[in-house]
Length: 288
Image (cartoon, rainbow, N blue to C red; front, side):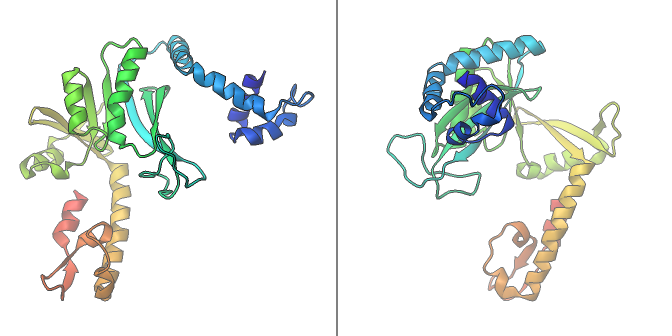
């Protein structure tokens, strides 16, 4: 009964268990006999003891319901902070890099695996000061141990798949796809990829809307995509930065206080810093 109520409350109005205990009267069939708060916490303890069983059961039910083949997984992490600044040794809740901008508060790191249909596969919780890239190997090993999987392609951003993770996946014959910028590629490779004459269209979509090119470099298969929607978004953001850069040209003293990022990267200065101008070449390259 408590478990049903907790699920209904989580769907209807996610909140802490203390608040949930106050909301019992709002649900039909609850409230006549009030459930004590300590019973909510006790239920959480019981569920925690069966965590792996629950994960495997939900995966099996989902797999049976949607009849999907687990061949592509997406992995990413986020941080969940707590309204506290007190750290305890060897505790999960630690201060670390916060994706919520709450670096002064303790947090945990949550790693989530999702299939190609956006359905969650599993999750893992890590100490709040964990480096996000270091969590992926553990998450993949846990997934392989818990679920029957043949061939999997891991999709993640470049911050997630560092050198150690790439080595692990190569050694374990795990294919992967990284979302990355072309700015780190040699000029010749980059120019080949962005040349629209080398781009191909996808059936049913015009080349002006979306297209892609591909090549190989150092044994890797590189795919470069063009999206008109993304191009418009980037152009708008770039124009705002150019306007800010021009404002700094009128007040050079403010430019000295900024770093070479955002609007600052569109400005070049003399060695003595006495003269600053717009770097048109950087702006042109950014537009590519």
